Amino acid sequence: MTLLAAFATDQFTVFVGDKRRTNVEDYNEYYDDMRKVFKINDRVIVGFSGDFEVTLDCLRYIVQLPILDFDVTRVAHELKIYLAEKQKMDNELQQTVILSGIDSSENVAIITMNHDNSFELSEVIPDEGHFNWQLALADINPHEFISESINTIIESDSELDLNRVIELAKDTVSYVSKDDRFVSDNFDIEYLVKF
Image (cartoon, rainbow, N blue to C red; front, side, top):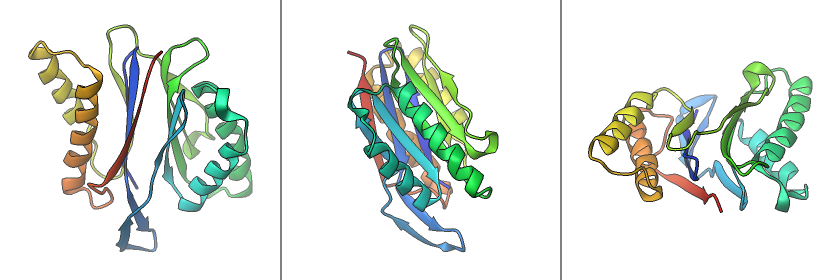
């Protein structure tokens, strides 16, 4: 129960995640203190939605790897193996992971995985001049809001530059958090630019 949104062009990626942590036994108990988006190195950003303890376990696992030179695909592969093994021990495990960053071919990519399909990787690489996004969400789906916002930018003959996409990411959290009790208006945002 969260909002993760990874946005990408062929030149950069922007990743935003709200900070709400909800007690699954009492939805009225929540805290806006949980970081869900992490810049792992200068090639990878990762975001987690799901069990708080599983998120912490994933982070502990990642930091013990020699990740300094890992690209986004390698980190995704490592997390897939780790989470698939955890799922074998706990078939009720619920976790969604989105990664964005630079792959080994120097492409910007967004990779998603979740418990529903045994953490199989799904990768999106934006074509030149195109814009893609991937979401993990609670109750309110901002897909139409994002599409309309992008169309407005394009119709005004403006470019989807890094600053505009950062503003779009912030606006997406604001849009969802107004009506979705599982999403906080407090958020963390990270970005990477292809070098």
